Amino acid sequence: MPEMVVTNDDLSKIMDTSDEWISSRTGIRERRLAREETTASMSVTAAKRALENAGITAQEIDLIIVGTITGDYVTPSTACEVQAALGADKAVAFDINAACSGFMFALHIADAYIKTGVYKTALILGAETLSKIMDWNDRSTCVLFGDGAGAAVVRSDETGLLAYDQGSDGARGTVLTCRSRENNNPFVKNPTEPSYTHMDGQEVYKFAVTTVPASIKKVVGEAGLTIEDIDCFALHQANIRIIQSVAKRLKAPEEKFPTSLDHCGNVSAASVPILLDEINRKGILKPGMKIVLSGFGGGLTWGSAVLEW
Ligand code: COA
Image: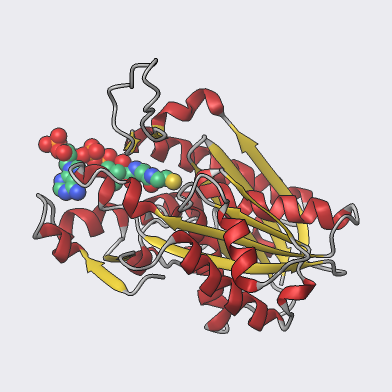
């Protein structure tokens, strides 16, 4: 994550908001915002730590996928920038755009390549500099998001990914949008809306609290397990109320839902891998544990997986 910490009180000095409003509605107390860091630089740091943690070299990577909607360039992709920085010259590298589900979609793509024998070792990332696509005059969105990156190495093994569910609902995509850059083609007229994030918070909330529990129930069933069998639910960190509502709908204790949103905010595609890394380093995850990962957001998109740790 970037170095700069921005608290809710810091925000209340530059806009009409308060720690009370933000923390009571979302659970967010502070977030990291990039100044010097870029989507690629945070990705490279996360990637190096993931390689070290997995005990492999960059030469062993066959595939690099970055889930991001905030790459530094339209081209080259963030994945190609990561490849160059790591010297992973045997890898094929590309980005995918699935907003807050980006890491989950990357995981499923990597799994499909590995299962079909095309590649053996993948490096997957979720990385975002959301601060550059926020409208800092819109207090209802800019206070929710943060910047950061997370990475994981995925390899073929006996255990691991037990089941996967993903979906998209483009027809409801207008509830969370961010226009692309302005067009300077002299033959066309630019649209009037600026290229910042726009969100219908209540519609996104309704989507999340219905779709996520349904997706988790489905994937847990497909893994031949019950909700009670799951030791830990590592969900996309959008809002504590969404997480509490999902826990309630699944009839699972809230203690099984670790959080990082209090100090990260919503980091979109980076939020599941950052949370996974935090709970891994805290020693919460033990071999054999059954874990659910679930990401959801813009598109609309969602993806859930059951892992055996
Ligand atoms: N500080 C203070 N007041 C704020 C504010 C802020 N940062 N942002 C909005 N408000 C005000 C609004 O202007 C509104 O005022 P009004 O009643 O005078 O018009 C009031 O707070 C209530 O706004 P509303 O949008 O109805 O609040 P809400 O209870 O729906 O909560 C969210 C807003 C965004 C916290 C909530 O809808 C949410 O969490 N949605 C899910 C969003 C999400 O997680 N998206 C990412 C998914 S990947």
